[in-house]
Length: 148
Image (spheres, rainbow, N blue to C red):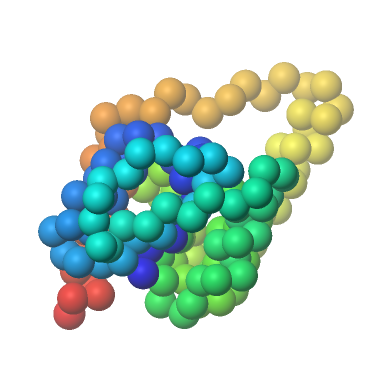
């Protein structure tokens, strides 16, 4: 099953996930704080959860199972999912797994401390075609392993 932290997922990534689900029959659950249009498909479900900080993340973390794929930019959610046996791919196609999840959380916490101190760190670069290709490749690899 594929779980998507849908509020922060770019449209291009969601569209890749929709096509992959329709092509393979893999179940997709998108979790968001508000309703949005999704394709009509028995394999695609949108779950609208209450508004509030981390409500969608908590819903995903509570419901994932070993072997699921989670799509998120949220590092604490990624760590929680990895600890339950999931693989995580961020929106740029970077893998978060048991080997690197804790290190990514430490880096996130460090950067948050730096920002809180007033230091300007800038944001991530714009979402690019290279990011889309890397995401598509990682999604396809996960789907291929599921099929094998």
